[in-house]
Length: 443
Ligand SMILES: *Cc1c(COP(=O)(O)O)cnc(C)c1O
Image (tube, rainbow, N blue to C red; front, side, top):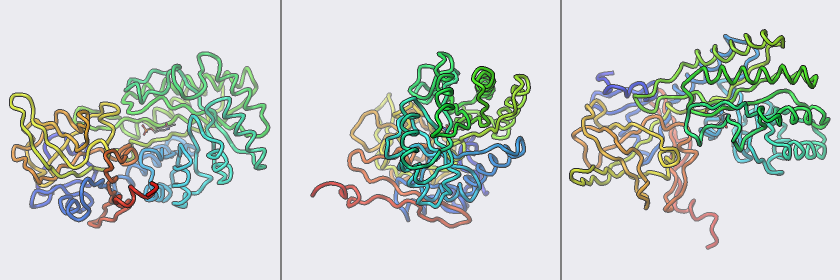
C-alpha cells in the first residue's frame, strides 16, 4: 500500500482494500476505477478474500467454543449462486427464507441437508419445495404453519426435522424495523404470553414432524453482546421449563443472527470471537445452572459476513450547489441499487475511488437518479475538495441487503456484481438489460 486511507475508512472497507500508486482504490488487487470502466456503474464489487475470512472466523471461533456448534449463513443478505457456492466451500450451513432463495441454493448445488428453511408465512408450494428437496430443518413460525407442514409431510410420506421460532421478549437496541425479539412482533411464538409453551406441546405431540429445537432471532445490527447473553438465558430457561413441565427435551438452540457491523467510522462492532464465546459460554453456564444438558448452539450471521465485503461504485453525473444550504452530488444509481438509506435511515460513508487518499473536507449530499426527493444515498457525506463530474464514488459496506433489495424503479436495470481476488475480477451477476426488464411483459 503506497498511501493510507483517510481516517475511519480502513475499518469499513473490504480487508484487501488498498491505494494504488496513482491514488486509485483497489480491492482484491483490482483497480476499482478500471472495474467501473470495464463493467459499468453502478457496480457491486465483492472482495472474495473478505467473504472467506469472515466465514472462516465464524467457523473457527464457534468450533473452538463447542464442537457441535453450527454456523448458518443467512442467505437473504446476499443470496446469489456465487455466494451459496462460496458458503458451501467454507463448510457453513445456509438459511433461506423463501422458495426463491431455496431454488438459488439448490441451483448452486448447496447440500440440502445443510439448509434451514425460514419464513413467517411460507406458502404451501414453498413448504412442498422444502419437503421434496429434503432440507435439513424447517423453522416453524405459527400454529397454522405447523398444521400445514404436518399435513404436507404426511402427503409426501416424509417426517421433517423442525424448530419452532420463539419470541423471547428481548428489546434489542436497534431500529424498530430490524428488531424482532419483542413480544409485539409478526414473528414467532411468544414466551411471555405462554403461547410458546403451547406450541411446543402441540409440535411434540404431532407425529408427522420431528421437533428438535427452538430458534430465536432478536434483531439485526446489534452491538451489545449482553443482548445475546440475555436472549440465551431466556431461551435456556424456556428449554428447562419445557423439559420440567412437558417432559420435552430439545437439543438444538438456534440464536439467529444480527451481529452489528461498522457502516461508518462511528460504529464500533464486537468481534466474531467475542460473540462466539459470549453465546456458547452463556449457554453452557446457564444450562448447568438450570440442570439441563448443554444444547447444540447454532447462529445465523448474514450482515457480519457480507456487509463489509463489498463497495458500490457510482459515477458522478451532476453537481448542484444550493448556496448556503447544501451541494447535491447526483450519481447514476440510488434507491434501485441500495434501498437501505430510504428503508431504515441507514448511514453510509463515501470516498472518491480515483483519489482514494484525498482528505475528505467537503460536505455534500449524495443523491440518486430516481424521481423521488427521498432518493438520497448519503445526506452528509464527506468527499475531497477536488470532487468533479466523472469521478467514481465508492460507498463501502454495501455487501449485505444491498444487491438483494435492488429493484427496477424507473425501469432502471439492476446492477452487475463482480467478485475480485488476486488481481482478477469475475462477473457473478450480469447487469440487467432493457430486454430483461421487458421479458415478462405482454408485448
Ligand atoms: C435476517 C435474519 C438473520 C441474519 O441477520 P443479520 O443481521 O444479517 O446477521 C438470521 N436469522 C434470521 C431468522 C433472520 O431473519
